[in-house]
Image (cartoon, rainbow, N blue to C red; front, side, top):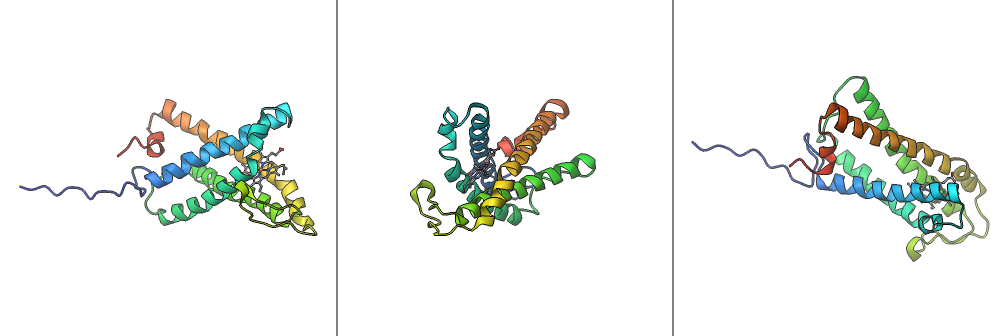
Length: 190
Ligand code: HEM
């Protein structure tokens, strides 16, 4: 008797069992770039501008611009895979996880958007990696700078706290509940 093989899941797409290669690359690449941003700004707060912080902060704007582009791709990809992802389940913890993930997505979009808005409205040319995106203005659009000055850094630190909570919950899943949640994003499941 011949057995019918199970339908093969395209490895780049997500499934109910695990995240596919595209989601995983986006997740870990963004995690590394966000770490760069927070380590740099954290060191700047602790040690001042003229320290090792300048090594990280010197690339803050270009790296932030790349993060902005990556979150756009990630949102589109998440939407196209929304019916096809591991389920968080139901109950209080699952709802909190959903809300926490949603808040991180909102902040990953808002934080760089505010800074880019300030760059668009500013008097200086904005050219990350040497590519001119916004030319210099003769007169700045003051509200863009005020809005970003008020919210960019503050919301970024809120995002950092949410990311710490996210990492903390992964540790709880791995060490206490031992439900192998990390493997969905780490690629240990087929
Ligand atoms: C997801 C991406 C980004 C993250 C996580 C991030 C994070 C941060 C953090 C934590 C600070 C320090 C706030 C403080 O001093 O307490 C900061 C400041 C700053 N960021 Fe970003 N940033 C991002 C994207 C960008 C982009 C795209 C630009 C430029 C277009 C930019 C420009 C600046 C500037 C000029 C400052 C110093 C002035 C200020 O605090 O507003 N950032 N950012």
